[in-house]
Length: 170
Ligand SMILES: [Fe+2]
Ligand SMILES: [Fe+2]
Image (cartoon, rainbow, N blue to C red):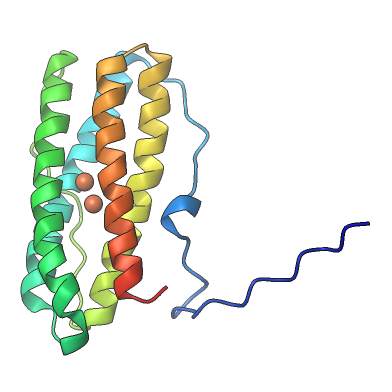
């Protein structure tokens, strides 16, 4: 009989429970939506992209510590990529017959550099979960162009999460 596999060594824990990795980001059971409901959800995603863009600009400037030099430059790249996501989502919302919103979601800042990166990672894990759900919803509505655009965004959010996990040595 196969022996139970040995437990993996505990990872370095963060202040609370162990943080989920990008690949473990919660997969929500996708809710079936109408097209107007999907447009509303995409507009919420858009507000979070604008917030992420701003948060990365602030963190890239405010982050301190020699160990964070590489990730500091990377945060500027992330900011630019969140901007591209906002453009892509706006185009898709318009294409679906909606009006792209200009609301900005909550921006999370901290005086502590490590906390900044943890806040950024929380945002990325949330984005990964949201876009996984959104890809499935686009598929249900047979909006294949939208699905492709969302998949492209999802790939980049997964890269962002990995960059932050590396910097946090998770
Ligand atoms: Fe993004
Ligand atoms: Fe991101």
